[in-house]
Amino acid sequence: MGNERRRRILFYGINILLPLLVGGIIYVVFRRDSYIAAFFSETIGINIGQHMLPEWLNTVVRNYLSDVLWAYSLTFALSALFKYNRRNTVIVFMICIVFVVAIELLQMTNTFSGTFDIVDIILEAIAVSLALLIIKHFEEEHHEKDNQNP
Image (cartoon, rainbow, N blue to C red; front, top):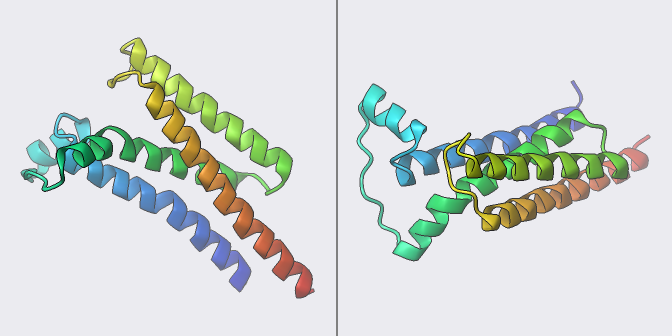
């Protein structure tokens, strides 16, 4: 396996797995009522202690950050499946936005636990856009290097 291929796998892998890991940790620490927190506290016996953040920051982290991280991760996962180009970037963006909106709508109908929140949709759309900008920068840098080293 060539260095460029390894670099791509590492780039996408980190940007998929790290946000999922951090999002899971946020659920365990900040969302004591979540399924993940219940699993850790009941099954494994880990007690979740009080966190030391100011209340406003605790609210932001608890209510938005894990969802933002997961939208970011989803964008990278879908982008890893498609060859990078403008058309596929639009397709990935649309799939992610439809998914984000669908999850929020399902929360409104109590199909999924959670509360419908338009701010979630906005923040997750920003996360998707940021992820796509990072991917664009990475892929265009790779394209330039590939063209310089025939």
